[in-house]
Image (cartoon, rainbow, N blue to C red; front, side, top):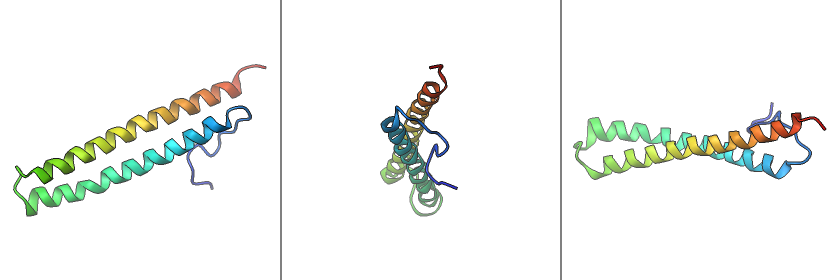
Length: 93
């Protein structure tokens, strides 16, 4: 079992694009984990430690939302690259 994204996709002509899409896929996984890791800090700061009007709380929410949005965008671009690679492999020669 290979742990990198799109491990079953093979290509002869578009190897650099496949490599880039794998890097982008792994990057999107990292961004999602980073965004999800901020939510426990948000819960702690919101309910336990700090008043809700604090700028630190808003900063954490903005950073988490930005990371999650970037992860979705990077994942979409990576998926489009892989769709193009699959299309190139299935077209008749």
